[in-house]
Amino acid sequence: MVFDTHNHTRFSFDADMDVQEALKKAESCHMNLVLTEHYDLNERQEDGSSVDFDLAHYFDAYGPLRGEHLLLGIELGLDNRPDYTARNRALVETHPFDMVIGSVHNLQDFDLYSDRAKNFLSKHDLFGQYLIYAEHTIHRNPYIDTFAHIDYPCRYLKYSDNVLRYEDYPLLMDNLLSTLIENDICLEINLRLIDQNGFREGLESIVRRYSELGGSYVTIGGDNHTAESIGTNYALGEAMAREYNLVPVYFKERKRMVDKLTL
Image (cartoon, rainbow, N blue to C red):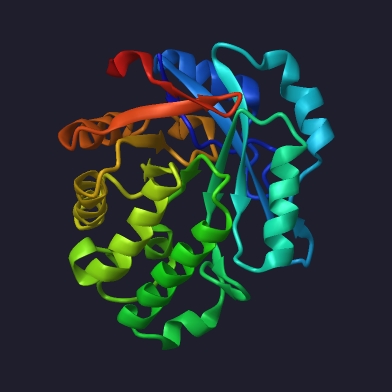
C-alpha cells in the first residue's frame, strides 16, 4: 500500500485528529500514513504559545502503533538563521524519526499565514521573496527528507490570481528546485489545492520543471488534519508524479523507500 506522507493528529496545534480514526480511514483507502506533527521553533500561536509538542509523549503514545501501516515523522518549520538551524538539526539528530519534512511557513518574522503586511505587497514581490528565502533556507537545512507544499503561500493571499507558476519566476524557481536536487531532498506533491483549477496547473508546472532539472523522487502528502480528508485527491498526486516520470517515496528510519504500488 502507498503512504500519505503528511498528516497531523492531536499533537499538532491546529489539528485534533484521532490516530485510530486516521488509521481506520487510511485502511479503507488502502493507504498507510506518516505522521508529521508541527514543530515550528520560529513561530507562535495567536495566544503566544509555542508551535511544538512533547516529543517524549509523542513517541510513548504512538510507538506501540509504529510499524507497517504507521510511521512517525515531524514537520519542521525551517528558518535560515543560525540559532534556529542548529536547534532544528539537533532535534532531528537526537530523536528516532522515520521522516522529516521541512516547511517554510514564514520569512523570518514575516508570517505567510497571518501577517497583514502581505496584503500590501505585490504578488510578484511576495512570491519572489518567498522563493529566494526558501532557497537560502534549504541551503542551511539540508538534513530534511522532503520540502513540503512549495505552493503554501497560495492558500492565504488576497490577490485576484493566487497561483504560483514556474513560468512567472523561472530563475528563482530553478535555483530552489536545483538546491533540492543537489541536496537529495524530495519535492512534495501537496494535495491541498491539487483539485482546483489554476492551482493544479501551477503545481504541475513546478513538478514538470523539477523533473526536467533531474529530480527523481517525490513524496505525496494530503496535509491532513482530519481523518475524513485522508485519501482525498491522492490519485491526482500519483498521476502527476507518473506523468513526469517521478517516483513516489516515503521514508522509514530516514531511509528512502519506494511506494509498493508504484513499482
